[in-house]
Length: 210
Image (tube, rainbow, N blue to C red; front, side):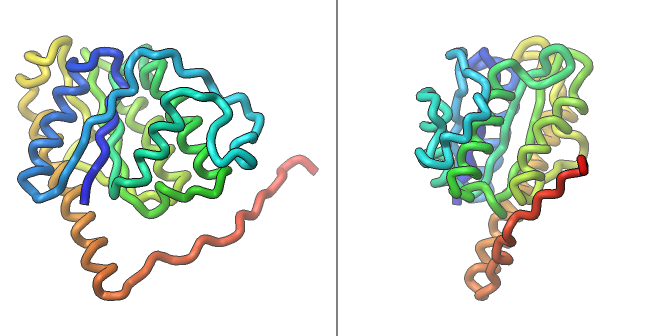
């Protein structure tokens, strides 16, 4: 079992990475593998709403999103990390997640369904809960169990050194990792016991404009 930790910060080894690294170390102690995937600073174009992914089986835009979707299918759980920029997720995280989730779903690749997900954020001060809520919506629309910590999953600080001083925040990263590991082990036990996830239903779309 392994968890993909997605670093949505333009700083490869910044505050968000520091929180994700704490999670990775705790997951290892719990016997769960992990890998940190950097979105990086490369420009990520927004979704074109062209729905070409339905025919192509992937997003029509050729960048890191398709690479990520292919890679993500190999993992059992996901934690997306983002710094808080203007009280919301970073400028690369939103178009990246929009296209990754939309293109894989429209292409019929339900790679995220029933796999656990969670969001963690880092900030100097405010905007954390709004950003967590924003990121968790990707999991909720994809039928993914959302894993929580003991508090909202955030760390505070302007530098990695300051983040490490946020004892409560870093403790919550470890608690989140333990909860993720526990859930994955429960899923594995369920599979071994012959308990399978419910089959997907055909989507019903309701148009409120009559």
